Amino acid sequence: MLSDPTLADHHRDHLRTLLARYQGALTQEGIGGVVIYAGAPQDHFLDDTAASWKPNPHFSLFAPLPDAAGSAVLIPASGAPELLHLQADDFWHAPPRSPEGPWLDVLPATLVMSERARDQLIAAWAARCAGPTVALGPGHPDPTALRHRVDFARAEKTPYELVCLRAANLRAVRGHRAVAEGFRAEDSEFELHLRYLAATGHEDHELPYTNIIGLNERGAILHYHHRTRDRGPSRSLLIDAGASAGGYAADITRTYAREAGVFQDLITAMDALQQGIVARLAPGVPWASLQDATMEALADVLIESGIARGSKAALLEAGVPERFMPHGLGHLLGIQVHDAGGQLANAEGDLTPPPANHPALRLTRTLTPEMVVTVEPGLYFIPSFLRTLRAGRERELLNWPLIETLTPFGGIRIEDNVRITPEGPENLTRDAFAGAPAP
Ligand code: GLY
Ligand code: MN
Ligand code: MN
Image 1 (cartoon, rainbow, N blue to C red):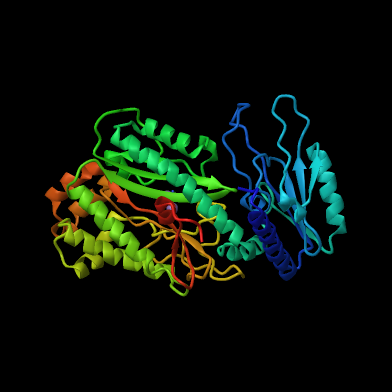
Image 2: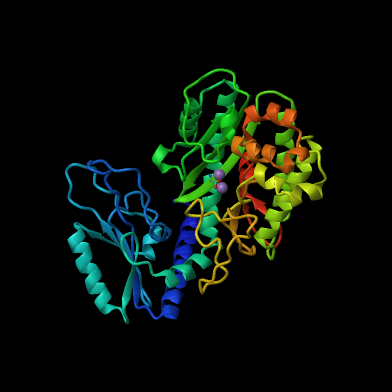
């Protein structure tokens, strides 16, 4: 991917944009410079092995490195940035691969052989900065005002980031296709996961988040991370699985039924609902209004499918759709799967909390061009919520025999990654499934 000369230009431009954002924020906060530490893996308690690890996302935004542990990026309020790449002399492990690529023209790298050498260079650099410096990374006091400024800005993706996000979608779609085939072959959840890794070429720890692969009623467990090994005929599959390109995440969900019938009809209805919401994405639209629109459309699906008997107004008044979709419509997407800054009202760090009836909403901003968001409506048969509904006044609004028929199928979620533009939404995920050339 990085050998394409146009991409190299995009990458350098991306780094210049980032640098301008961070330096603008430093100047506004009266800070002389920031050390962005990648961090390092932590060993398990009383053990000498570590869990899988991801660098500080602020580090990864600047330096897309597979071997980042212990490294740091130095950004003075004015002047050139620098990457200190730690390559400790360690015969137990493979040495870190050295950074390479045209992006180093903008972010020159210095190799350091020890943490001590790194810290000496940082101290000398800080002494040259025009003003006090701060650190941004694990184990350091959070420079919150500075972080809010750069997090607010990063919601709008650069052309380089869009190339990465499209590539991540193409990669994830390869995995999704392989898993759809595995579902037809009656694979276990564990086997489906292995198919996904093979098709995307990812190791488990390289995925942007742990795969959610739930057969049957396990599709109703929103963050289902187990993988049963039971093979054999299954009714339904919910797969929420991403992929990574240049460090950027795809976040895609699809739901399948083995046979035609009422659950497949619900999947078709939810797919139409999802595309209806995607069509409304435009600059100036408050995200919370789309959450409300989703609840209205979900009430329609509940009524038209025969799951609910009451009027739409009665269902909405009683908060019934929220019991079938207890999560937010979506979130910002980028170097992190739940990208930062979704509830920031402005660069100064004022927050817009989620509305009381949608406490799980991660995104409360108004859409602007070049934001990339997920759109992921769902409809689940979650036993604990169903018990609550059945015990309350809402009982009369629902068709319990049909709900009992559908509960063994788990649930439905359809999730795409979408770029906001004034000309209309760009659906990165549907384009990837369709094999469309990038714009
Ligand atoms: N895969 C996590 C999410 O959809 O937000
Ligand atoms: Mn997802
Ligand atoms: Mn998501």
